Length: 287
Image (cartoon, rainbow, N blue to C red; front, side, top):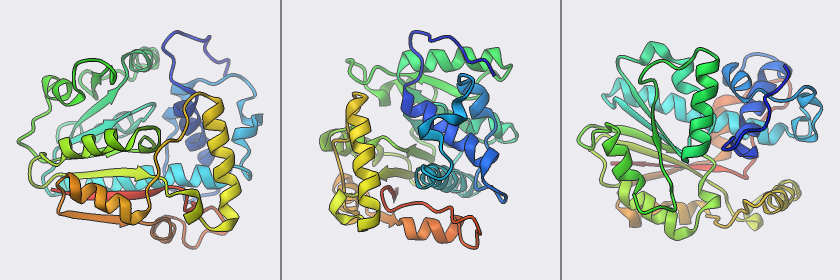
């Protein structure tokens, strides 16, 4: 794989890394696979030798990789569960290089997928999908949003065809730590007005002092790397604070999904030791 030349608007390194960790799972981890995503690697089109990069080391990054896998699998399982109950819309906030729409074309007539992201990386992704022959019309519906501009992402989403009167699943994965508390609260307040039967799932990172001692050095290293790349982690929540955030925003029904729960659900019985860390957990809030 030769790798594409750098392009203006290319996805940031975090989005690419997530796609490549999902590929490493298929290439390095034994089955059963938690998530089978071979499209992300084709989409990212990394340079030759990408598997020798330090951040792709199968052992050294196993906890990060497992975290990416666990949150994606949990969200996708939730989407299928809620679809069976009548929620026919799925919104990804900060979609990055997610490939759910391409991997599940069988759901196209029952589930409308909306990807909300910044215009430049989203345009890059659309070009790559076209190059790969994966640009099925309307699958997904792309919603380009300048999050620092005057137009709200919600208005853009509705204009793109999202129906606020129908139940939906809305996911924000790997985003909350980059946003201010005020921005996270505003997003949840907006989403609390979703139609009854809707569900919101958001990842959050607990503060360093709440992590087990064995996991703190890894988190500290991740924070240093994020600062160095210009995308620092700025907001952390304890599980209790995440629940308060959701309830204050207007969700009466909210619960916390711990790393222990994810490990029991997706990694129990594995002989390779693959398991996620307590460095990222999930908030699930229902309307």
